[in-house]
Length: 405
Ligand SMILES: Nc1nc2c(ncn2[C@@H]2O[C@H](COP(=O)(O)OP(=O)(O)OP(=O)(O)O)[C@@H](O)[C@H]2O)c(=O)[nH]1
Ligand SMILES: [Mg+2]
Image (tube, rainbow, N blue to C red; front, top):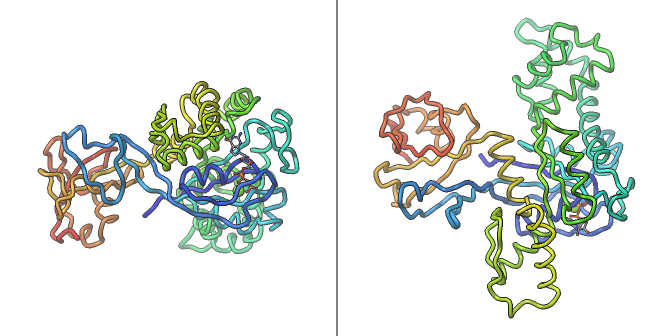
């Protein structure tokens, strides 16, 4: 099960540039509004310190990649068309946008922190736009869309809620199924909005809106990307964004810097591991003046101020902090740390915190889960019960009556 992350935000915020830098694709970007017309999907990576050094082995990753001691675990990212006001009513590319956003486990909400996008989405001078308003506008569109779903299913929800075998939370789940709303989200939103016992047909407009805000926030975890940090005015807008949204993770980035570095790296001009706080020019003689100047600009404006481009940090923070996924290394042979074919530390699985050894088995193969007897922990040698709650960076083998495929 691959984790899915969607890039949302106002037009020209830099979503496609970020997407290209994460996936090494070459989707069209421009300084005209609404460049992206249809969603693009690709593979990015969550990065975590690999366990191979701890065990003193050299690994042969199969479902992931290991570089300089860092494990790169693939996830799926989708770049979406910019949102405009009225998208919730189906304006512009609204419906298409929202249905793709709905499939994501988490959203990266990209904001042009330099404030160089005006009200209509056109590029203007840095400092003239309002990143806080941009963020709020896009969030409002999302909530209005939830509200519309709610209102158009009101009659049905009222009926389902009254059935003896179901509850209002079940009715909410049915309505918002396509958005990935789970029963725990519905129950939480009902409780938080103090609407638990109130007949859904008697909620007033404000109550519906409030409920939908809470449902949006809980069902679709979101991280703010403050992009274009290399430009003037970004530092102050970043600070304001962070102050305004203390409950959210806000990561400063420069998508354009990351894209330049990754492309320079793929051409062999520089050594750069995404996420690291340095890069090294290895073939200075092959760089032209413009490329030299671009790298010097990145060193000065991005690494000098913020230590890194922030792009890889944003993706990894989404996976490990926002979604609280744990990286788990299952192996077949616990002594040699290999799979059946002798590959050392072949796979990493990302599982939500609270997952058990049995959940891990289920992700690998349903037969393995059915016959699961216990797990063995590499670090302690302990036998762990099937309901053992996994911890980040666990290395273990699953012992089952079924043979591992
Ligand atoms: N200085 C600077 N410019 C950037 C950065 N990221 C993107 N840009 C520029 O911002 C403009 C818009 O970038 P896109 O990636 O096309 O933006 P988008 O959000 O995908 O826009 P839509 O597809 O219209 O929604 C382009 O001119 C990019 O070169 C950045 O980190 N720094
Ligand atoms: Mg785009």
